[in-house]
Length: 124
Length: 116
Image (cartoon, rainbow over all chains, first blue to last red; front, side, top):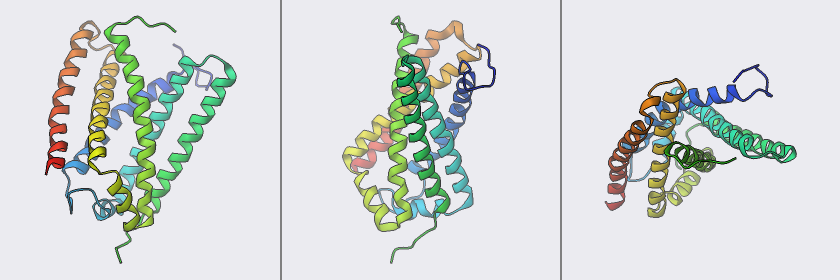
């Protein structure tokens, strides 16, 4: 497969990105898993302050943003690959591409706004 | 597109199905967690909804899906870099065994929370 660096390529960049982000996502997920299931908790379940105190710090904001960006791009890139492999009719493919990209953008923005703008609100 | 039903092709189809499921989960997860910006009441209310026994049970499915996709993804990565192609089948079953072990240990930890 030759990669010519354009969106009309055979998909080599998407292929490579998927491998690289997948590897990083495994590491980030292990940390996420450890914190959520074995980290400090005030009650039995996960409550506001458990998450809020972390999410208010620059370290975890950065961590969650990286996790979000890699996760969304990995997921949407995967969906695009599936569309490319199975949908042969050009307008159908174009329509599905647009839906996937739109979906990705909406949730990327929603997630990024959540993480970046977050400040702790203490219960009244 | 036709597939021949070998371990590798089944593993590949399952990889794509699990990937679609995980992407769907990610989108829902972002939706649930975005409530944290609305303060403690809103966040605790939605979190109570997704921490019922039913969701805890579904979370086991999430664990299994994540483990499959991670282990199989790692396997694909190895082969793409030309590592272990001759031992494909052994590596496949090896990752299945290790994945099941991790699932049993982590799943037990999650279930024991429900039982308390």
